[in-house]
Amino acid sequence: MGLIILIVIAYFVWKILYADSASTKMVLKQKKRTEEQKKVIRYFLNGEHNLRRMKDEEYDAMVAEFVNRDHRSKALSRVGLDEDELKEIAPICLHNYNYMKAWARKGKDGKWRSSSYQVTWLFFSANQLYLYQETINFDCEEKRTSTEEFHYKDVVSFSTTTEVEEIIEEYKTDGTEVHKNIESNKFKIVVPGDSFYAAMQPTPENERAIQGLKNKLREKKNA
Image 1 (tube, one colour):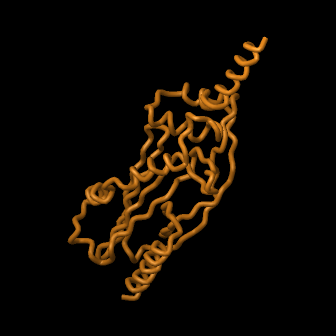
Image 2 (cartoon, helix red, strand yellow; image 1 turned 30 degrees about the vertical axis):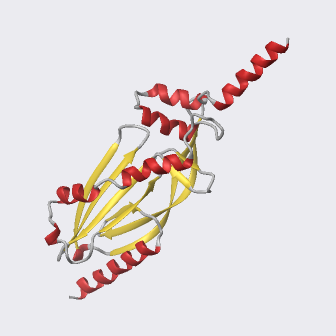
Image 3 (tube, one colour; image 1 turned 90 degrees about the vertical axis):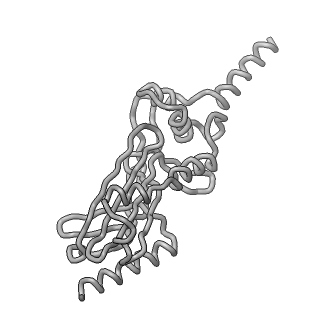
């Protein structure tokens, strides 16, 4: 009898500490994923005490590796410019988590993290602003890149804004997604009839850079 009890206890301990959650199993069955992508799914969908789940610091290191890649050279190549053409204002790099249609969870430090991340480079020539943006989803192969260019005279405004975005916080075994609204910080470019956004961190450095853009825009429009 005692042995049976020990086996039952061991099973439940294994279930809590090592077994993937039902949600994780369901998502992993949906498509083929690399081992790194499986780790990301487990980070967002396994329980807090599951030993197969990365720690917040490990996920941060994965994100940092992506951020520290040479996006600048790729961006310059995509917009078709060289450094000599971009001396109007120093290039600006903005980056942060992208929450649109992404998994998200709040870490032990109270910080929200998502399965998607966005890096945006802004370049400035004498007459135009160039934008290169790369968004990656760590849980699958999805990656999006885009480029835009704007004449200063066509830009209505630069601003920072706090947007409410819908995240996927939980995935039920019946396939139902549990959504939650959270706030995220964005850099916003407004042109006639359209707006463009870039995920950004609300740091003093970024705020100073964007204030410099506003000043330069006024200078260009008054020239």
